[in-house]
Image (tube, rainbow, N blue to C red; front, side, top):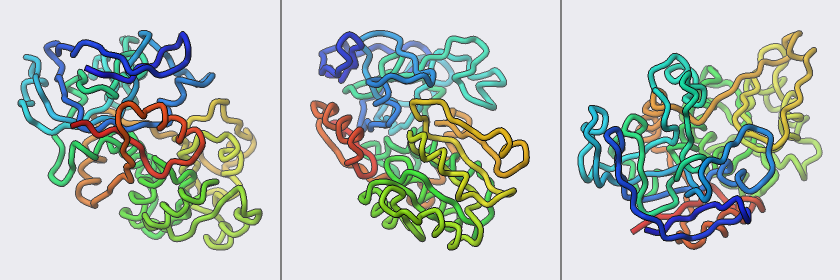
Length: 346
């Protein structure tokens, strides 16, 4: 089969011919219907000190996928799936799924220390077929198509929990910082939950997408010098939560200025190359709170996907052939992409 593989020796992608893998007892072999590109995939190509670990080299990239079951293993979890099932899945594998960290925090912190992430330390989904752990998979709800739903299985789960975990009440104000691949979904989730939404970005096409998704107000934080003042005026003192989906450290530095003092929350989702800088006095005196949200586990994946199906949350997906994944990477790096980019397989 064909697979887009990252090779650290030249820091490039290569379209390679590789064997179709065989599932182990706890795994499924899935014919990929759709694989989509996430910003963390692009982090493979750039220096970072945020803990991104490359395992095998070369490695098939991609950790957002949906498809159709071709073959299943013999374990209890795998035997729940049958050939032809339309499925979505997330990428943490080789962990125990049973320890407190796996169940309540994230599989990355599994007490076994053996967790690997597909697309980084093991082969991912920009290939015609992929192996997935049956415990990380679910049958798609009615209304979700394996040819288009891939972005929901990282971007969707991440955006849903980034918004939902803020714990706001309907009618409160939320800022969505970064209205691209993650943020345009975040706007949809926030509106479906009854929040008033301000979209912030430096790309006008992303702001246009935010408006299309229902944002009440949008601002270009690069070209509008008064954007902070306007946000404070519109919200009557600041947003109740600011959810940052970007990889921009500057956007994190700016965020406290638009959060309602003493009540507001900064939700950390996007991962800049550099560590964040927080003012310890602000935190100690309760100017704002800081919380994090991650890309999901098998324990919180299902609510996000079922909410998406119920409320018709749809990713804006631009599609390309498998050969053009390097072009997709270039578009993401240049901030010229709108919504999510993906490959749809025959």
